[in-house]
Length: 482
Ligand SMILES: NC(=O)c1ccc[n+]([C@@H]2O[C@H](COP(=O)([O-])OP(=O)(O)OC[C@H]3O[C@@H](n4cnc5c(N)ncnc54)[C@H](O)[C@@H]3O)[C@@H](O)[C@H]2O)c1
Ligand SMILES: O=C[C@H](O)CS(=O)(=O)O
Image (cartoon, rainbow, N blue to C red; front, side):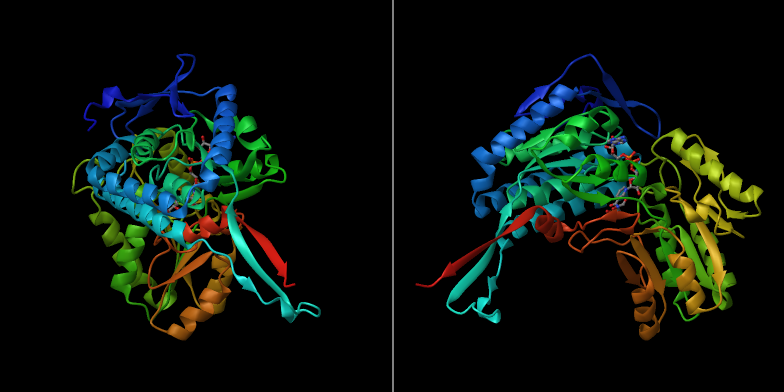
């Protein structure tokens, strides 16, 4: 049990050994009070290459032949260990990210579920029988497909959910029988190390999981270009993700990027349900989630009533110390991130937007903010704000709101609030999104659903079984009966 935050000083983990040097050490600060949570020693390019070498060797020596029941056991044991130490992980999540403790517990619980889904998934990797006599001349042949692990997976992850989003990559990779080099976010890298230790205790072979620490830009060349890497799976911002895809050449790439989620409230919606769901959906992780509620389109008849409920809901939120059980909204990750969001709000106001709730910043803490009178060109609408900021926009018709919601080059999740199931399905089909919720806000995600963006928001799907599929490859095996 780790109780003293000062003892967190971690290096990289390569081939089962911790590698540290004093050449470049970064501090991990608590975003709420700027206190030191821990330090990391940054990996060199050579370390990254060593990590790939280890992952490549261990894949060929053991992982690719490890039986499904063993991979499944390792994942289940890791889930059990995490469950036993859930509060310790939740506390560290609060310290690294600034998210409220209740939210941190949810992230730990989701992480346990991800491991359990992967443990089950490891036993469900299968191909199919192909009916060869569907083709002329295929009589007297039998064919099957089988799925095989791909090899070394490089995973690069963001700061906002440093446990569950890391596990969305590690757990499916291990379930499939692959080996991994993980580069966690340098602002929130500590949970990854505690997790590494759980995998080790659960029996994962040394070198099957390697961690390289430090800013991604310093390690990008060895982590992306090496021909031994079979998939790069990245979660983070759009510009970085698309640049990595260019560098990755012919390698398979999964990109889970950002968005500016639209949520649509029709006249017949249950307004209390909608308002509660939207408020919560815009402030989780201080709005620093890729599917945070950002654009709220409200049909004109209910616009005043819904706006009032939103403002009321936002004003009731408790903003402050994330370790306080009553806190709903903690700080943003850095003061610079909060200042950037504040600048976007100010720019919108200068161009005619109105602040109807919040709007003030206190260091890293940005009050949840509701804006009206916004236009489509304002950054708060057309770009990913990644902060607890809502833009509320009136609309007349279904046709008009579909156009407005699709007027973006981003699209992961959307929410629709209506009691008319026919309309709900019509709109869900018309929205250019990776996923659509009906009577839930865009923020909702369960960890086994197919999850990923369209347009500039990404490529590929996560959600445990979908990620397992992307981390295996199909081989055809045919037989001519003699
Ligand atoms: N779609 C999703 O599932 C999802 C989930 C969480 C976050 N996100 C997105 O992530 C972004 C916020 O996270 P962030 O600030 O940590 O993102 P980021 O892109 O700055 O960093 C993500 C990771 O990439 C690394 N990195 C940064 N620059 C790099 C470079 N030039 N080359 C290689 N690696 C580099 C970082 O070290 C970090 O590990 C938001 O846009 C958010 O929407 C998306
Ligand atoms: O930041 C985006 C995340 O993918 C949201 S979630 O926590 O995984 O639902």
